[in-house]
Length: 415
Image 1: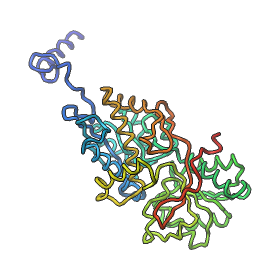
Image 2 (image 1 turned 90 degrees about the vertical axis):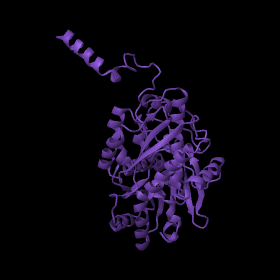
Image 3 (image 1 turned 135 degrees about the vertical axis):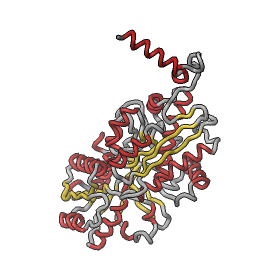
Protein backbone atom coordinates (compact mmCIF):
# COMPACT_ATOMS: atom_id res chain seq x y z
CA UNK A 1 0.00 0.00 0.00
CA UNK A 2 2.92 2.35 0.79
CA UNK A 3 4.44 1.79 -2.70
CA UNK A 4 1.12 2.59 -4.37
CA UNK A 5 0.86 5.81 -2.43
CA UNK A 6 4.38 6.82 -3.40
CA UNK A 7 3.73 6.10 -7.09
CA UNK A 8 0.48 8.05 -6.93
CA UNK A 9 2.36 11.00 -5.44
CA UNK A 10 4.93 10.85 -8.25
CA UNK A 11 2.17 10.92 -10.86
CA UNK A 12 0.57 13.95 -9.22
CA UNK A 13 3.88 15.77 -9.06
CA UNK A 14 4.52 15.02 -12.75
CA UNK A 15 1.11 16.47 -13.67
CA UNK A 16 1.62 19.61 -11.56
CA UNK A 17 5.05 20.52 -12.85
CA UNK A 18 4.80 24.16 -11.87
CA UNK A 19 4.31 23.27 -8.23
CA UNK A 20 7.10 20.66 -8.08
CA UNK A 21 9.86 22.11 -10.26
CA UNK A 22 11.35 25.31 -11.56
CA UNK A 23 10.07 24.74 -15.13
CA UNK A 24 8.91 22.10 -17.53
CA UNK A 25 10.85 19.00 -16.69
CA UNK A 26 13.42 21.06 -14.77
CA UNK A 27 14.19 21.09 -11.01
CA UNK A 28 13.36 24.20 -8.96
CA UNK A 29 15.98 26.89 -9.30
CA UNK A 30 18.37 26.79 -6.39
CA UNK A 31 18.65 30.58 -6.31
CA UNK A 32 14.89 31.27 -6.26
CA UNK A 33 14.03 33.69 -3.44
CA UNK A 34 12.58 32.05 -0.35
CA UNK A 35 8.93 32.44 0.51
CA UNK A 36 8.73 34.55 3.65
CA UNK A 37 5.44 36.01 4.93
CA UNK A 38 5.45 39.75 4.44
CA UNK A 39 8.54 39.86 2.23
CA UNK A 40 8.67 40.53 -1.51
CA UNK A 41 12.28 39.78 -2.37
CA UNK A 42 11.88 40.58 -6.07
CA UNK A 43 10.71 44.14 -5.36
CA UNK A 44 12.59 44.59 -2.08
CA UNK A 45 9.46 45.30 -0.04
CA UNK A 46 8.83 44.29 3.57
CA UNK A 47 5.25 44.44 4.84
CA UNK A 48 4.87 45.18 8.53
CA UNK A 49 1.73 45.38 10.64
CA UNK A 50 0.29 47.81 13.17
CA UNK A 51 -2.59 47.06 15.53
CA UNK A 52 -3.55 50.58 16.58
CA UNK A 53 -6.03 52.13 19.00
CA UNK A 54 -7.28 55.11 17.03
CA UNK A 55 -10.73 54.76 18.56
CA UNK A 56 -11.90 53.79 22.05
CA UNK A 57 -10.71 54.97 25.48
CA UNK A 58 -7.02 55.14 24.51
CA UNK A 59 -7.49 57.05 21.25
CA UNK A 60 -5.89 60.24 22.62
CA UNK A 61 -2.63 58.27 22.76
CA UNK A 62 -3.40 55.81 20.00
CA UNK A 63 -3.88 58.39 17.25
CA UNK A 64 -0.49 60.13 17.62
CA UNK A 65 1.16 56.78 18.24
CA UNK A 66 -0.04 55.57 14.85
CA UNK A 67 1.42 58.67 13.22
CA UNK A 68 4.88 57.90 14.60
CA UNK A 69 5.12 54.68 12.59
CA UNK A 70 3.77 56.34 9.45
CA UNK A 71 6.50 58.97 9.67
CA UNK A 72 9.13 56.27 10.06
CA UNK A 73 7.85 54.40 7.00
CA UNK A 74 7.76 57.57 4.88
CA UNK A 75 11.30 58.43 5.89
CA UNK A 76 12.60 54.99 4.95
CA UNK A 77 10.69 54.87 1.67
CA UNK A 78 11.95 58.31 0.63
CA UNK A 79 15.46 56.82 0.49
CA UNK A 80 18.84 57.86 1.88
CA UNK A 81 17.81 57.37 5.52
CA UNK A 82 20.61 54.86 6.05
CA UNK A 83 18.24 52.71 8.11
CA UNK A 84 17.94 49.90 5.53
CA UNK A 85 20.14 48.67 2.68
CA UNK A 86 19.64 50.55 -0.59
CA UNK A 87 16.46 49.80 -2.48
CA UNK A 88 14.48 48.24 0.35
CA UNK A 89 11.08 49.73 1.16
CA UNK A 90 8.37 49.17 3.77
CA UNK A 91 4.64 48.73 3.40
CA UNK A 92 2.61 49.38 6.54
CA UNK A 93 -0.60 47.38 7.02
CA UNK A 94 -2.71 48.99 9.75
CA UNK A 95 -5.82 48.03 11.69
CA UNK A 96 -7.70 49.76 14.54
CA UNK A 97 -8.79 47.53 17.45
CA UNK A 98 -10.21 50.38 19.51
CA UNK A 99 -8.46 49.15 22.68
CA UNK A 100 -10.57 45.99 22.58
CA UNK A 101 -8.70 42.73 23.31
CA UNK A 102 -11.13 40.54 21.36
CA UNK A 103 -10.90 42.84 18.36
CA UNK A 104 -7.11 42.79 18.65
CA UNK A 105 -7.10 38.98 18.33
CA UNK A 106 -9.49 39.13 15.38
CA UNK A 107 -7.41 41.68 13.50
CA UNK A 108 -4.16 39.86 14.24
CA UNK A 109 -5.58 36.75 12.61
CA UNK A 110 -6.68 38.88 9.66
CA UNK A 111 -3.20 40.21 8.84
CA UNK A 112 -0.83 37.64 10.36
CA UNK A 113 0.02 35.97 7.03
CA UNK A 114 0.66 39.31 5.30
CA UNK A 115 3.37 40.73 7.58
CA UNK A 116 6.87 39.94 8.74
CA UNK A 117 6.36 41.52 12.17
CA UNK A 118 4.07 43.94 14.02
CA UNK A 119 5.64 47.36 14.43
CA UNK A 120 2.86 48.26 16.90
CA UNK A 121 0.60 46.23 19.15
CA UNK A 122 -1.15 48.93 21.14
CA UNK A 123 -1.88 48.42 24.81
CA UNK A 124 -1.14 45.83 27.46
CA UNK A 125 -4.60 44.18 27.59
CA UNK A 126 -4.67 43.99 23.80
CA UNK A 127 -1.21 42.44 23.43
CA UNK A 128 -1.26 39.79 26.15
CA UNK A 129 -3.95 37.64 24.42
CA UNK A 130 -1.78 37.55 21.29
CA UNK A 131 1.19 35.89 22.96
CA UNK A 132 0.32 32.24 22.16
CA UNK A 133 -0.31 33.16 18.51
CA UNK A 134 2.82 35.27 18.25
CA UNK A 135 4.87 32.31 19.44
CA UNK A 136 3.05 29.86 17.18
CA UNK A 137 3.61 31.99 14.08
CA UNK A 138 7.01 33.32 15.22
CA UNK A 139 5.90 36.95 14.82
CA UNK A 140 7.57 39.69 16.84
CA UNK A 141 5.11 42.36 18.03
CA UNK A 142 6.48 45.63 19.38
CA UNK A 143 4.07 46.59 22.16
CA UNK A 144 2.89 50.12 22.82
CA UNK A 145 3.16 49.08 26.44
CA UNK A 146 5.78 49.11 29.16
CA UNK A 147 4.15 46.32 31.16
CA UNK A 148 6.72 44.16 32.92
CA UNK A 149 5.04 41.17 31.28
CA UNK A 150 6.25 42.33 27.86
CA UNK A 151 9.90 41.87 28.78
CA UNK A 152 9.23 38.32 29.96
CA UNK A 153 8.20 37.11 26.49
CA UNK A 154 10.56 36.79 23.52
CA UNK A 155 8.09 38.09 20.94
CA UNK A 156 7.04 41.32 22.75
CA UNK A 157 10.21 43.40 23.30
CA UNK A 158 9.60 46.65 25.24
CA UNK A 159 11.73 49.70 24.56
CA UNK A 160 11.80 51.49 27.93
CA UNK A 161 11.69 50.73 31.68
CA UNK A 162 8.47 49.17 32.92
CA UNK A 163 5.50 50.71 34.72
CA UNK A 164 6.67 48.81 37.81
CA UNK A 165 10.02 50.61 37.69
CA UNK A 166 8.30 53.97 37.14
CA UNK A 167 6.05 53.45 40.16
CA UNK A 168 8.96 52.41 42.35
CA UNK A 169 10.94 55.50 41.34
CA UNK A 170 7.87 57.63 42.08
CA UNK A 171 7.69 56.26 45.64
CA UNK A 172 11.39 56.95 46.19
CA UNK A 173 10.84 60.56 45.16
CA UNK A 174 7.74 60.91 47.34
CA UNK A 175 9.66 59.77 50.42
CA UNK A 176 12.64 61.96 49.58
CA UNK A 177 10.60 65.14 49.08
CA UNK A 178 8.34 64.48 52.08
CA UNK A 179 11.37 64.14 54.31
CA UNK A 180 10.60 60.68 55.65
CA UNK A 181 8.49 57.60 55.01
CA UNK A 182 6.28 58.51 57.96
CA UNK A 183 5.33 61.77 56.23
CA UNK A 184 3.91 59.93 53.22
CA UNK A 185 0.36 58.64 53.26
CA UNK A 186 0.22 56.89 49.93
CA UNK A 187 -2.77 56.47 47.69
CA UNK A 188 -3.22 54.99 44.23
CA UNK A 189 -5.81 55.05 41.49
CA UNK A 190 -5.22 52.55 38.72
CA UNK A 191 -6.92 51.17 35.63
CA UNK A 192 -8.60 47.77 35.84
CA UNK A 193 -6.25 45.89 33.51
CA UNK A 194 -2.68 44.64 33.33
CA UNK A 195 -1.32 48.15 32.83
CA UNK A 196 -3.00 49.30 36.04
CA UNK A 197 -1.87 46.20 37.91
CA UNK A 198 1.74 46.81 36.90
CA UNK A 199 1.79 50.32 38.31
CA UNK A 200 -0.03 49.18 41.43
CA UNK A 201 2.47 46.36 41.99
CA UNK A 202 5.45 48.70 41.74
CA UNK A 203 3.88 51.27 44.10
CA UNK A 204 3.03 48.62 46.71
CA UNK A 205 6.45 46.96 46.52
CA UNK A 206 8.25 50.29 46.97
CA UNK A 207 5.92 51.27 49.83
CA UNK A 208 6.81 48.04 51.60
CA UNK A 209 10.51 48.67 51.04
CA UNK A 210 10.33 52.18 52.52
CA UNK A 211 7.83 51.34 55.25
CA UNK A 212 5.17 53.67 53.79
CA UNK A 213 1.53 53.15 54.68
CA UNK A 214 -0.87 52.91 51.72
CA UNK A 215 -4.05 54.47 53.05
CA UNK A 216 -6.32 54.16 49.99
CA UNK A 217 -6.40 52.01 46.86
CA UNK A 218 -8.85 53.00 44.11
CA UNK A 219 -9.44 51.56 40.66
CA UNK A 220 -11.54 52.36 37.60
CA UNK A 221 -12.72 50.78 34.36
CA UNK A 222 -11.46 52.11 30.99
CA UNK A 223 -13.98 54.62 29.69
CA UNK A 224 -15.46 55.31 33.13
CA UNK A 225 -17.21 58.69 33.28
CA UNK A 226 -17.34 59.61 36.98
CA UNK A 227 -14.51 59.51 39.53
CA UNK A 228 -16.13 61.31 42.44
CA UNK A 229 -16.32 58.22 44.67
CA UNK A 230 -12.65 57.37 44.14
CA UNK A 231 -11.48 60.93 44.84
CA UNK A 232 -13.70 61.17 47.91
CA UNK A 233 -12.18 57.95 49.27
CA UNK A 234 -8.63 59.21 48.72
CA UNK A 235 -9.45 62.51 50.40
CA UNK A 236 -11.16 60.85 53.37
CA UNK A 237 -8.12 58.61 53.88
CA UNK A 238 -5.83 61.64 53.86
CA UNK A 239 -3.60 60.39 51.02
CA UNK A 240 -0.77 62.90 50.51
CA UNK A 241 0.88 61.28 47.46
CA UNK A 242 -1.22 59.50 44.84
CA UNK A 243 0.05 57.38 41.95
CA UNK A 244 -1.95 57.69 38.74
CA UNK A 245 -1.64 54.52 36.67
CA UNK A 246 -4.17 55.95 34.27
CA UNK A 247 -4.78 56.86 30.64
CA UNK A 248 -5.22 60.55 29.74
CA UNK A 249 -8.94 59.96 29.24
CA UNK A 250 -9.09 59.32 33.01
CA UNK A 251 -6.29 61.64 34.19
CA UNK A 252 -8.10 64.83 33.24
CA UNK A 253 -11.46 63.89 34.83
CA UNK A 254 -9.71 62.61 37.98
CA UNK A 255 -7.77 65.83 38.51
CA UNK A 256 -10.84 67.86 37.63
CA UNK A 257 -12.95 66.01 40.20
CA UNK A 258 -10.21 66.52 42.80
CA UNK A 259 -10.20 70.26 42.07
CA UNK A 260 -13.96 70.41 42.61
CA UNK A 261 -13.65 68.53 45.89
CA UNK A 262 -10.79 70.80 47.02
CA UNK A 263 -8.42 67.86 47.28
CA UNK A 264 -4.83 68.59 46.26
CA UNK A 265 -2.35 65.84 47.06
CA UNK A 266 0.84 65.33 45.08
CA UNK A 267 -0.15 63.43 41.94
CA UNK A 268 2.50 61.28 40.24
CA UNK A 269 1.52 59.82 36.87
CA UNK A 270 2.92 56.80 35.07
CA UNK A 271 4.07 57.50 31.51
CA UNK A 272 0.68 56.89 29.81
CA UNK A 273 -1.16 59.26 32.17
CA UNK A 274 -0.15 62.34 30.18
CA UNK A 275 -0.97 63.62 26.68
CA UNK A 276 0.52 66.80 25.21
CA UNK A 277 -2.95 68.17 24.47
CA UNK A 278 -3.07 68.95 28.21
CA UNK A 279 -0.74 71.86 27.46
CA UNK A 280 -3.68 73.51 25.70
CA UNK A 281 -5.74 75.43 28.32
CA UNK A 282 -8.81 75.15 26.11
CA UNK A 283 -8.71 71.37 26.71
CA UNK A 284 -8.17 71.49 30.49
CA UNK A 285 -7.22 74.52 32.62
CA UNK A 286 -3.56 74.49 33.62
CA UNK A 287 -4.45 74.93 37.30
CA UNK A 288 -5.78 71.36 37.31
CA UNK A 289 -2.18 70.16 36.94
CA UNK A 290 -0.54 72.37 39.58
CA UNK A 291 0.36 69.33 41.72
CA UNK A 292 0.92 66.87 38.85
CA UNK A 293 4.30 65.19 38.24
CA UNK A 294 5.29 62.73 35.52
CA UNK A 295 7.59 59.72 35.95
CA UNK A 296 9.05 58.35 32.72
CA UNK A 297 12.24 57.61 30.78
CA UNK A 298 11.58 58.65 27.14
CA UNK A 299 12.69 62.01 25.78
CA UNK A 300 9.91 64.57 25.63
CA UNK A 301 9.06 66.62 22.55
CA UNK A 302 11.75 69.21 21.89
CA UNK A 303 14.13 68.05 24.62
CA UNK A 304 17.53 69.31 23.44
CA UNK A 305 19.71 66.66 21.80
CA UNK A 306 21.29 65.83 18.46
CA UNK A 307 18.65 63.15 17.94
CA UNK A 308 15.82 65.61 18.63
CA UNK A 309 17.15 68.02 16.02
CA UNK A 310 17.14 65.21 13.48
CA UNK A 311 13.69 64.00 14.50
CA UNK A 312 12.09 67.44 14.35
CA UNK A 313 13.36 67.78 10.80
CA UNK A 314 11.78 64.44 9.89
CA UNK A 315 8.52 65.50 11.55
CA UNK A 316 8.46 68.79 9.62
CA UNK A 317 8.91 66.89 6.38
CA UNK A 318 6.58 63.93 6.90
CA UNK A 319 4.47 64.45 9.99
CA UNK A 320 3.27 68.00 10.55
CA UNK A 321 0.42 67.62 8.06
CA UNK A 322 -0.73 64.44 9.82
CA UNK A 323 -0.88 65.55 13.45
CA UNK A 324 0.26 68.37 15.78
CA UNK A 325 3.39 67.81 17.90
CA UNK A 326 2.89 65.09 20.48
CA UNK A 327 5.22 63.06 22.69
CA UNK A 328 3.58 59.80 21.58
CA UNK A 329 4.49 60.47 17.96
CA UNK A 330 8.08 60.66 19.17
CA UNK A 331 7.78 57.51 21.32
CA UNK A 332 6.31 55.53 18.44
CA UNK A 333 8.95 56.78 16.02
CA UNK A 334 11.69 55.75 18.43
CA UNK A 335 10.19 52.29 18.77
CA UNK A 336 10.11 52.12 14.98
CA UNK A 337 13.80 52.95 14.83
CA UNK A 338 14.55 49.93 16.99
CA UNK A 339 12.28 47.68 14.90
CA UNK A 340 13.96 48.85 11.69
CA UNK A 341 17.42 48.35 13.17
CA UNK A 342 16.57 44.67 13.70
CA UNK A 343 15.31 44.49 10.11
CA UNK A 344 18.53 46.05 8.84
CA UNK A 345 20.60 43.48 10.70
CA UNK A 346 18.55 40.61 9.28
CA UNK A 347 19.01 41.95 5.75
CA UNK A 348 22.74 42.49 6.16
CA UNK A 349 23.15 38.91 7.38
CA UNK A 350 20.97 37.61 4.54
CA UNK A 351 18.74 36.06 7.20
CA UNK A 352 15.38 37.63 6.38
CA UNK A 353 12.68 35.38 7.78
CA UNK A 354 10.54 35.49 10.88
CA UNK A 355 13.08 33.38 12.70
CA UNK A 356 15.91 35.48 11.30
CA UNK A 357 14.20 38.69 12.37
CA UNK A 358 14.00 37.44 15.96
CA UNK A 359 17.69 36.47 15.82
CA UNK A 360 18.57 39.93 14.55
CA UNK A 361 16.47 41.57 17.25
CA UNK A 362 18.22 39.51 19.90
CA UNK A 363 21.62 40.62 18.62
CA UNK A 364 20.85 44.17 19.78
CA UNK A 365 22.95 45.00 22.84
CA UNK A 366 23.90 48.26 24.59
CA UNK A 367 21.78 50.15 22.04
CA UNK A 368 20.53 53.70 22.61
CA UNK A 369 18.94 54.44 19.20
CA UNK A 370 21.70 56.80 18.21
CA UNK A 371 21.74 58.65 21.52
CA UNK A 372 17.97 59.12 21.54
CA UNK A 373 17.46 57.59 24.97
CA UNK A 374 19.41 57.89 28.20
CA UNK A 375 19.42 54.17 28.85
CA UNK A 376 20.67 51.26 26.73
CA UNK A 377 18.66 48.31 25.50
CA UNK A 378 19.93 44.77 25.75
CA UNK A 379 17.73 42.29 23.92
CA UNK A 380 20.19 39.41 23.88
CA UNK A 381 18.28 37.32 26.41
CA UNK A 382 14.81 36.95 27.89
CA UNK A 383 13.61 38.59 30.06
CA UNK A 384 14.77 41.60 28.07
CA UNK A 385 16.71 44.36 29.85
CA UNK A 386 15.54 47.81 28.82
CA UNK A 387 16.84 50.05 31.55
CA UNK A 388 15.78 50.71 35.13
CA UNK A 389 16.37 54.46 35.37
CA UNK A 390 13.51 56.95 35.17
CA UNK A 391 13.07 60.60 36.15
CA UNK A 392 10.46 62.97 37.56
CA UNK A 393 9.23 65.89 35.46
CA UNK A 394 6.77 68.72 36.03
CA UNK A 395 4.83 70.42 33.20
CA UNK A 396 5.88 73.95 32.27
CA UNK A 397 2.71 75.31 30.70
CA UNK A 398 4.14 78.65 29.64
CA UNK A 399 6.85 77.03 27.50
CA UNK A 400 4.82 73.88 26.69
CA UNK A 401 7.69 71.69 27.88
CA UNK A 402 8.99 70.16 31.11
CA UNK A 403 11.03 71.05 34.17
CA UNK A 404 13.32 68.39 35.58
CA UNK A 405 12.40 67.76 39.21
CA UNK A 406 14.46 64.63 39.92
CA UNK A 407 17.14 63.09 37.68
CA UNK A 408 17.30 59.63 36.17
CA UNK A 409 17.79 57.01 38.87
CA UNK A 410 17.09 53.37 39.52
CA UNK A 411 14.57 52.52 42.25
CA UNK A 412 16.13 52.09 45.68
CA UNK A 413 14.26 48.81 46.12
CA UNK A 414 16.26 47.33 43.20
CA UNK A 415 19.65 48.00 44.81
